Image (cartoon, rainbow over all chains, first blue to last red):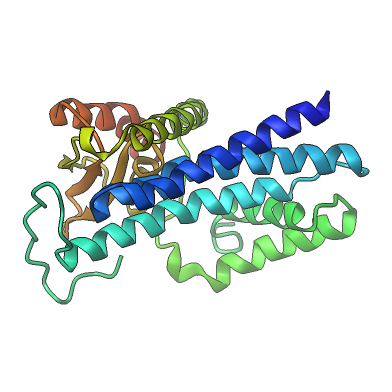
Length: 113
Length: 164
C-alpha cells in the first residue's frame, strides 16, 4: 500500500520536474522560460521530498525531517534566484515577446537589495 | 531583555532549524540549538535592522494556507500552459503599486508572487513603491494586480505592519 503511494508521489514529482524542464526548451522568450523552473519544478521537488520523508520515516526508526528543511530552503531560494534572473534580464534588455517596462533611471548610489 | 535577546523569533527559528538539521531530539542538541539561536542573531545583527513582530498569527496561518494552495494551483497551471504550447500564451509585464513599507514584507510579497500562479516578480523600483511583475498568461492585467494586492499584500500588511 505504502509502496503504491510512494511510487505515485515519485512519478508525479518526476513528471512535474520534466514539464518544468520542457518549458525551458519550448517557451519562446527568456521571461516566460523563467516560469517553468520556478513553479512546475517546485511542486515536482515537493512531491519527491514528501516521498523521501515518508520512505525514511517508515523504513527507519523515528521520523525523518530533513526534507522539511530542503523544502524550506528551496522555497526561499527559488523565487530569489528567479527574481534576480528577471532583474538582470531587464537590465540587459533581453529580447522579450511583450513590451518591457521602461527602465527607471536608478541613481548609481541605489541601495543594494 | 531587548539587548540580551534582540530577535526572539529568529532565535526560536534557528533553534528549530538546528534540531531539524541534526534530526534528533536530545537534551544536548536542544541546548546547542538554543545557544546557536542566541548567538547567531548577534553575529548577523546588521542584516536585521528592524525588529520583526507578527501581529496576527491567525492571519499568518491563513496566509500560509492560501500560499500552499496557490503553489499547487500554480504548478498545475504552468505545467498545462507549457504542454499546450507557447503560441497561446499572453505574457505581460504589470506594475503593482505597493502599500507595504518594510523590507521584510516587500521581500516576502515578491517571493510569494514568484512561487504562485504564472507570475514572477521581476524588479522593485528604486523608491520601493512599485513592483514589476511578469506574468506568463493573463487576459486582464488590472484584475491580476487587484488579485495580488488583495490576496497577498493585504494579509502581509496586516501581519507585519499594522499598528495595534
